[in-house]
Image (cartoon, rainbow over all chains, first blue to last red; front, side, top):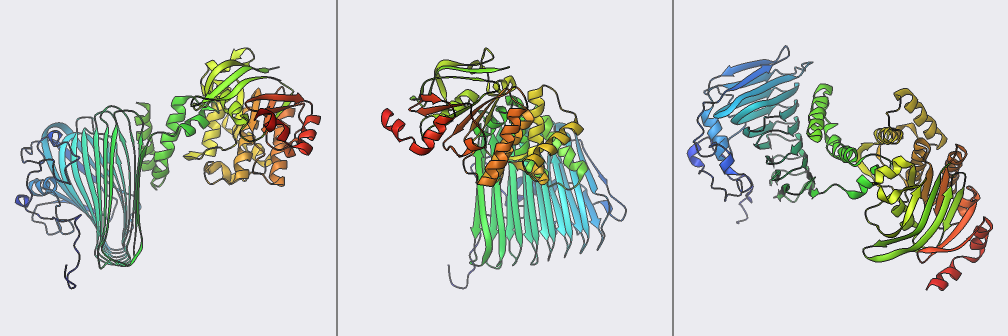
Length: 374
Length: 248
């Protein structure tokens, strides 16, 4: 490397709108080695025809617009360029995109709701959503995935100067659903982005939230909770690309796993590029493995290309329920099953408590309770 | 009227014998102090009775009103009327004190307490132990000081009202003010009804606040001397040296 060359990142090498730029994955690639390709129902190799039944509905408070637009709309693909084969497939296959716009300085009183309901896992569906929050506006978006589907999509969150966007994405699919999704947030100067991902259902869910910055002062907080049951593969791949000075990012994902072949994958990639002086970043993943036969893969990657960071760290832990916790609760008369539920609920609840909308927080807590009762 | 009867109790940790035949009977209305040097097996006795998985019972019985506690699970023992105040209460992230206490009281009483009554009992209990009201919303033992942890153990003792309470070094790590507050709590519990107390301690200091009826000296995994309160005074002046030499 010459003195005039900038060091390059190895974590985010490829991005293209062209499907031909991505080979069909074989499972040996770093980006695909954890994903069981045979269960993707052809989303990765072009064999998944768009014959699926997936209905997308949006509810917006007054002052916020929601439009269905054609592929040629200039707002599509402005913030995000597909970064893997399935993402590029979805980008090339969707027919109409949903574009939601929160106008400049608007602060709608209620949240925006987008519901995606699958009508069966027979054919595939492809989608694209763009959420634009114009400068100094503030908005909350709740995205709910339900029913059954084979679905690949990309969602772009474009957060303007000084704007704030909070997103809750709930993957509450039926047992046979397959969902591969990219959520990309682009933060302008002093923008704030809060993402809360909850993944409970589906046979295979692979969700890749990523963040990029176009100006200094951006602040991203990415939280996630997942509960993996027997046979489920729930994968979350985070990428925060710090390319602007004085931005922040914080990642905290927690999951519980129970049952034979319950498989969780968490990848936490953070790049701090040469220009990104004064970056403050931390990423954390914690897994609670409740039974034999469950497996959690957790891989944090922190790539620092500048010497001037304010803070950078990561942690990853995977472990069993602590016997001492259970003993303490049981010693106070609380039966084992309830003691176990209290500890798991506490472990995930610490994150869920951070959801600010009461209705959504209770909904998420209720969904976790339902998982615990299974 | 309840009786805890420990008969020839033998306990091992990872194949190493710790308790070598302990015999002790605690009746309600009585306070027994178990004193002894570090490593004598005092805490092992407490945790083995409560059912901690680390300890293996290799012989003997522990009967509470005729029921062998050793046949019961940890939570069944607690619901049968046994309480262990722990020396090192663990931190449980994300579980609030109020949620924990309500779950424990519900389990031990067999029915959920009326919300208003429970809130009142909790407030009174916390006031009596000089525990700040905000404490109820904190996570269980998380970030508690040593004194706060011990006061919280005694708060549980007063709320759960067991038949027999085993207090494992509740006095350790407390300053004089905290010791007084905690001792008053133990004395309120003793005065509240038919309850027996087994007080495990290394120091005689707490016995000035909580007067024992019987004192047992523990060494080498068994009781080596027994007597009345005067035995504590003897230990105060002479220490444990004579017992540690005898068992060495």
